[in-house]
Length: 205
Length: 99
Image (cartoon, rainbow over all chains, first blue to last red; front, top):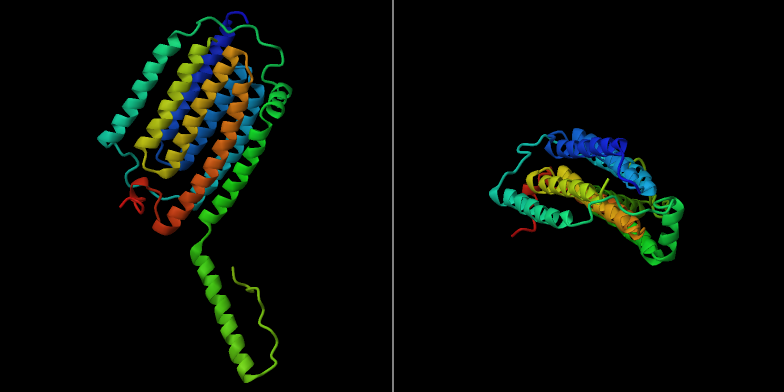
């Protein structure tokens, strides 16, 4: 690969600047909906960066899964539990110190990264990062991890449903069922041979 | 562009995500910070993948995206449960397991 052309550089700096800007915008917004929209913009710019790394498949997945699916999930949850915040930021010394510590760690990592060969990377094969090439590696060398991802997602689905279900509604449904049973027993007592009580709650949702 | 610049951008994303997780008290924004951190890691994966001419980095980034989807689903479910119990999404008020 030759040295980056002026156009490549312009695109990289534009996308990198936009990514950083939208990322900072995300974590400073008070309104969660604005934050999510800005995060979507971050992911779109990042997907452009991925494409410039010749990771075409990952760029497409980034838009589909992140900007598409995960952000829609966020939006739904925000719609469910949007509340005014009393104190959006918490600038306790220990937390600020944590951020500073991570910044220092990354600064140290930069000094390591400076030692990397600074020129453009070597020649890549033409199909680097295409769906075909990644599929080849994915289903040849990483078949079992790939299949276990589906188990992970299944567990996540079940866990999400179990954790977020409403105990109050369940208790109310159980109480209503017990009540119906009681009524049925009284009716059975007074009028033997009465029809069975319906087992499913009707009009109860 | 040389790999170095992509690494700097990935560090920046990770740092911004960390700041979001640590300094924001809204649990939703904290989850978004985690997503930013994961994306910073992904970018480093892809940058090194290109540097080494090895597609394994792409596969790992693919797995990380699937992991992020699972993490977001479970995290948001926990938030909904927290909101049901306490009427809040403030992380400082989620102290049930703290004593």
